[in-house]
Amino acid sequence: MGITSVIFICVLLVASGFVAWVGDVLGRQLGKRRIALFGLRPRRTSVLVAVITGMLITAGTISALALTSDTVRETLIRMDEVRRERARLIAERDEALGQRNDALVALESMRSALEEGRKTKELQEAQIAALTFQLTTSEEELASVKGEIADLNDQVKISQRQVNLLQEERDRLNRQLEEIKAQTEAQAAENARLASQIKEKESRVAELDAEIQRLQSRIALMSATEPKVLEGQQLGAFRIRTDLDQQAMQERLGTQLAALRDTYRDPLTGEAVLSGNELVIRGEDFVQAIKSIRSLPSDEAVVIAYATANVYGEEDVTIRVEVTSYYKVYATGSVIFSEVFSEPVSGTDPHRAAVASFMEDARDYLVDKRNLIPTSSGDVLQLTYDDMVSLSDKLAKVGYPAKIDMVALKDIFRTDFLVYGEHFTVNISKATSSGAS
Image 1 (cartoon, helix red, strand yellow):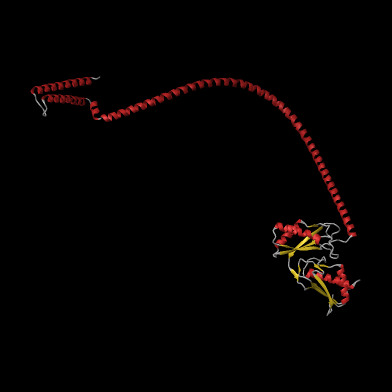
Image 2 (image 1 turned 180 degrees about the vertical axis):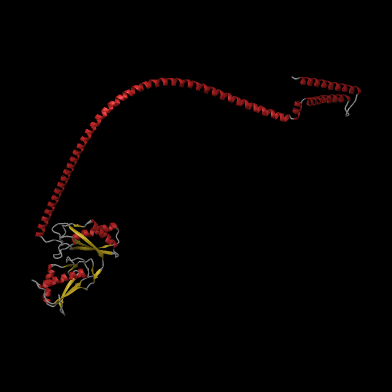
């Protein structure tokens, strides 16, 4: 404690004692004199004077402290601000202490890391020393190995020369082997080709033998019998609707074509001659027939079947078909064809020859001019041998010049066979005017 503080305390004690003595003296005097202040009793006045004296002591003390000490004066004037500053300083102190503790912890960690690094360094120095020793040993071994390698290189050079010689020998042998393989493969290919040719020729010979036997059988059959059906001959015709769906069209067309075998009649004898034969049509022709039927603008189509070759015995009958619209070509009672014969036709039987000529001309007319049935097979007109004899006899009775008329007995359509006595009749009368036959 400084001298100033001691003097200040002594002055404060003296002043306090003086003020207390003055108050005591003043209180006794007032009590003795029985003086009353502010309407109070003398005793109450004495107490009031004592209280005021105490207050003056305190005020005087504070004033003296303020006048004699800058610190006390600052404290009295800036008490709240000093408290706040004190709290801030305490917080800064605590924060500084925390940072100091963190720094101590970090320092301790660094000291541990430093100790670890020192130990690691010592371990690495030991390892370096060991590696240095190993390196020295390895250099010595390397020198020894280099010597061995040099010796091995010399041996390798010698072995390489031997290998080169062996490779040359191997390549030469491989070339010879390849040549032998190529010759063997070529010979094998040639043998296979020859064997294949032999098999093909044997198969072809067998096919030719079978074809020769078939042809010989056919020739024998052709020599012994007449053909049942001639090439291009009409086998039949039928109508079929054009608005059927694909499935129904296939079934209907197949059924109708199959039925032609039993409905076909020999033009001369009228007999069913194909009951033992099979009718065959190519698949593409069958498909094309369906397309043609469905493409026609009319409600019904006419399908006409023809033989593609002469048929003997029980051979298959290959057919082709023609599709056309269904329409009427002659009405009942109309004259289909007419011709005048001014004189008999030359021949063994001139009257029969005339009738045959008439039928041939009628057929050509119907085929070429009217396109009734587009075929030249002769079956457009069907009449028997007896019918021909009867007509020739009638012609002989009428005499010449004679007019022969073919007259429709019913409406004739594109699909109809012209059967004598059913579809047409032949009228023979005396000609009123002659004409060339």
